[in-house]
Amino acid sequence: MEEFFSEKQKEALNFFQENLDKWANDPLHKLKHVIIYDNKLSGVFDTFEAALTEAVAKYPRDAFIIQQVVRDDEVINFIYSAVS
Amino acid sequence: MGSFHSQPFSLNITPALSSDAQVGVVVSPLQLLMSGLNLQVAISTASADLQNPGFDKNSISAEVVIAHFDTGASRTSIDIKLAKKLKLMPTGPSTVYTANGPVKMPAYAIDLHFPNTNLMPFINLPIGSCNLAGQKNFSILLGRDVMSRWNVVWNGPSSTVFIND
View 1: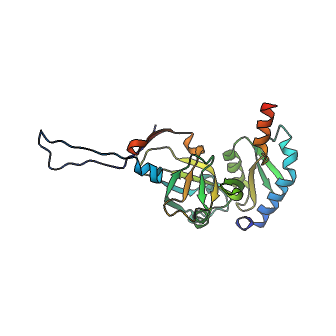
View 2: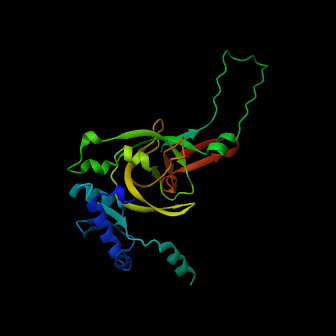
C-alpha cells in the first residue's frame, strides 16, 4: 500500500499511528477527523469534508493525510462495553 | 427530490393494435438476480481539491463508469486502477474487510454525479479503494454511505428498482 503515498504522507501516517492510542482516549479527539501535516496535528474536525476543505486550502495536496481517530478494534470494544 | 428508475424492458407497439388484440408482458427477476443493480455514475476530482493553491486545473479528470450496488459495503469504493487513471491523491489509508480478511488500501475524496437522472450528487465524498480486477462490468462499489441517503424500492420479480432522494 505504501506505493500510493508520498514520503511526507508516509511520515504523517507514522505520526498518526504513534499517537492514535493517546488521541483515542482523549474525548476531544476520539472519533474526530484529524489533519496530520508536517508531523503535527494540524486540525481536528467533526466531519471529513470540513477537514478536507481546510487541508487542501492550506497544504500541498501530497503532504497531508486525514484520518478519523478510531482504533481498528473500536467496534469490538463498543460491543463489549454495551453488553458488560 | 430527484429520482431514478431501472427497468429491464420497454414497450413500444406500432402500428397500434386492434381493439381485440391481447398483449402479454413477461417480466423476470433474472436481471437483478444475475447482475444486481448497476448504474452509471460520473466520478471526478473532489470539488475541495479545486481550492488547493497548487492544484493544476488542467489535470481535472472525470470519467463515466458503472457502479454496482453493494449493500455489504459500509463505504463506497473505487477500483484502484481507476483511481490511478484519474490521478486521485489519497487522503490516507483505510481498512477494507474482504472475504480474505482485512486489507489496507488508500482512501480518496471524490465528487459523484448520476448522469441521466436528477439524483443529487455527492460532493467531497470520502471513499475507499479495492481491487476490482476480476470485474469487467463495474469499477465502483456503491456502499451504504450513499444508499443511506436514498429511498430505494427494489422489485425483485420484475427486476425494477426505483430510487428517490
